[in-house]
Image (cartoon, rainbow, N blue to C red; front, side, top):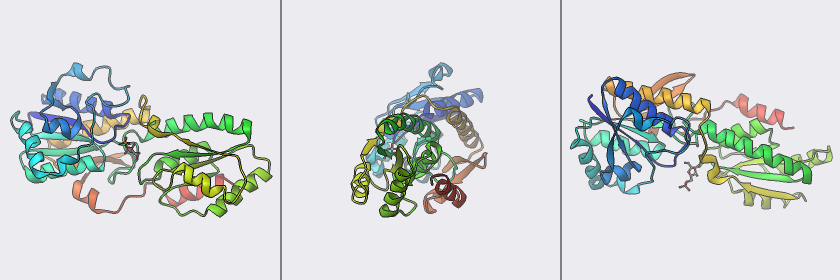
Length: 323
Ligand code: F6P
């Protein structure tokens, strides 16, 4: 392995820069040249590929976003479009590609590894959604979680002053992890996720019971994959007469300086991805399970049903603590 490339793809997440940095520095340490592909698969097709040096990743570990830029590139599903991208790697003698992103980004890498045996691919899970199989945590999840916590703590101040019920819609695509973790961390009265069933009448009764006990505010965290904050508010107010307000946190959840946990995770996974390429591995996604680095075949990552990254015990606890 003499030359590798790295790209970030799909929705960005805090910690992607730290992962790129780890890939670049670890590779250079082992005398491997590194190329940065700008704008994800779009840059691969358009030949927006440039050599990265040690200094290219200086002063990046603490920055949110991705200095390589990202893009969603549905065209990459087409074989002839992919061929252009593959040719751009081949003409530089690039033998390994590290793809930092989510599920869709991994699929692009898997197709490359199926179609050309001379280019190894490794995926690094970068998304705030925590929805990738083969890892307990994805890069960016912890930072997004902390952004939500910070926002809800602020919302709670005004909720208390006005004795309001706040419904906070959080991201996560089809995955409820950001809602569940943040709900537990802010002490939400109710957490609504796609993975668990809910009964709005029960939720309304619980909120009313809290008000009757003298609670000054109520916080409901709703995962975007389950319903919108607005529809949650209109369903809720069919059952109880509360002064409800909705906050959609939106893309603020994707920005900001990565937390320590995300920087460390990104650095470990970036370094491990390079180790795997050096040892001849391909078509695998790296991850962390029980604090150990692991690599899982893309096929296994895609073929299993979505991994649930929390225990029944944790679900029970959220109920027990939110009475
Ligand atoms: O996958 C990350 C994510 O932020 C999801 O949580 C969200 O549903 C989606 O991307 C938003 O995508 P876009 O930035 O393209 O609007």
